[in-house]
Length: 288
Image 1 (tube, rainbow, N blue to C red):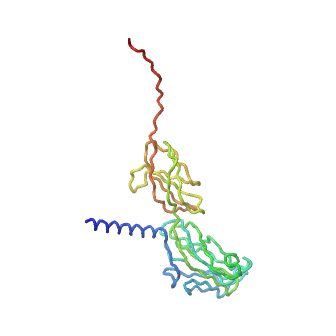
Image 2: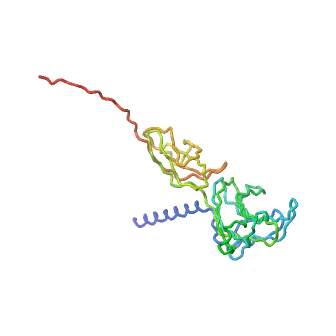
C-alpha cells in the first residue's frame, strides 16, 4: 500500500512539473528541422522565399515591387494560432543576416509582431536593422545574434516574422524561436501591520504595470469576492485591510490594454489589534 501511494505521489509530481513547463513555454521549436506545422507564409508586396535550410528558417528576397515610388520586397511567416485568450508573452529568437549594411535607409530590416484574430493587418512590435553592430564581431565577420521581445497579444493573435528590403539578394536566417508566458513569480508579503501589508514580486524588467488581486482567505478556487487594483510600483502597499484576518494575494503583468495570467497566490494574516488600556495606580493602607 505504501509503495502504491509513493508511486501516485511521484506521478503527481511529474505531472505538476510538465504542467508548469507547458505554462512557461508555449512554443519552443529548437531548431527548425522542417517547416513548422501551422506556420503560414504571406507576401505583402514583392516576392520572396521562406524555406528551412540547415536547421534555420531562411528569408530571401527574389524580386521587388514598386511601392510609393520605391522598389521594396516585404514578406514573412505567421505562426499557428496558440493564444485562445489575451496574454503577455516574451518572444525569443536568433537572427543572422547574410550581409551587414551601413545605413538603415536601405531598409534591409527584420520585424517581429503579430496578426490580431482574423485580421490581415500586421502589427510590428520590434524592427531590427542589419547595420546593428551586434551582427559583427571584432574582425568584421557577420555573426548570429539573440533577441527577446515582450509584447501584449489580443485574443486569437498569431505571432509573425517578416523581412523587408529595397534590393534583391538579401537574406535573414531565423532560428531558436520560443514563446514564453510573462507571469510574475514569487509574490511575497512583508511589513504586515493591522491594516496594511507590503507586497513584492519578481517580474520582467520591461514590465512597468501590474494588477494586484487579493481576497479573504478560505474562498477555494473562486476569486469573485476579491479586490483588484492596477498598480505602477513594485513593491506595493495594500491598505484598508481588516485586523486579525487572513488574505490570499496574487499578481498579473499588464502591458497596454492586455494582461497576463495571474501568478500563484500567497497567503498572509494581519495581527490582532489590542487597544492600549491605561491602568491607574491604586494605593491601600495596611490594616492594623
